[in-house]
Length: 288
Image (cartoon, rainbow, N blue to C red; front, side, top):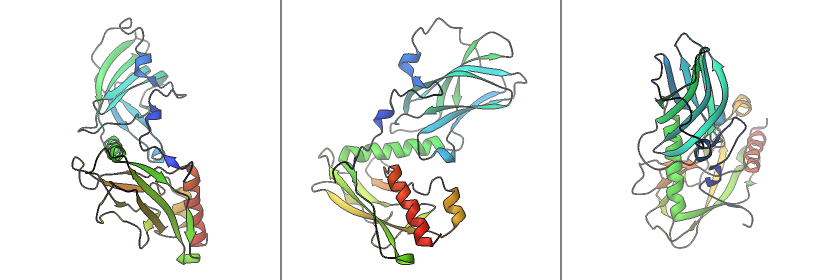
C-alpha cells in the first residue's frame, strides 16, 4: 500500500507553535527568573484541564480558569505540564471576570497514573502588578485521562507493530452495503506480548459481521504481518446524527498488553479522505 503508511505516535506535535501563542516550554523559559516572584493563587481563582467534544478529532485541549475573586483577571502566560506530558506554554493576553479557556495542543502522553496538570500562571488582578502563581488544574471530567490512556495504548502498540491503513471500498448495495477498510499490523520484532483486540463501534457506525470486534479473541502482532478488515455499517439512519456528528468517525482500536488495563484502545489513524468516505457512505447507505 504505497504512500498509505501511518505513523502511530504523533511525535510531530512536539515543539509545534500555534496561533494562540503555544510554544515548547524550553523556548518559553528563556529569561526565566527575571519576572515577579511566586505568590499564592488568590481565593476564588481555580483551574481545570479539559477537552471540548467538538475537538475530539484533534489534540486541542484547554485550561479553564474560573474566576470568583470579584476582580478582573488578566492572564498573559500559562505553563502547563504533568508527569504524563511535557510542558507547553500559552502566551497572549486574556482578560475576564467569569471564566476563560487557554487552548494548547496536548503533546503525546506517557503511560502512568493521574491526569491532573500543574499550571504556572502569570496574571494581574484588576490594574494591579503582575503576579505568578502555581496551581493544580484538575481533570474534573476525565477527558484528559482518557486522552492519555489512548496515547499509552497507541505507544504500546507502536512498540510491537507499525500500522498501515489501506484504501476504503464499499461492497454490496443499498441497505446491504458495507464499508470496508483494510488494516495491516506489521510487527517490529521489539515485543511479542502485544495483541490487537478488535475494533470498537462509534456513535454513527457499528461493526458488520466478519469485522474483528472489540471483545473478540486477541490476535498477537508478532511474526508475519497481521491483516484485518474493518467492516462498518451505520448504527442508525438519522440525518441529524450525521449533520451534527463530531466523533462518529473515531474508530477505537483495542490493544491488549500486560501493562494495559482491560479495554485499552486508541483511535485508528484515519485521514480526512477516509472520514469523508465514511460520511459519504453513511448518506448513500441510508438514502439521505
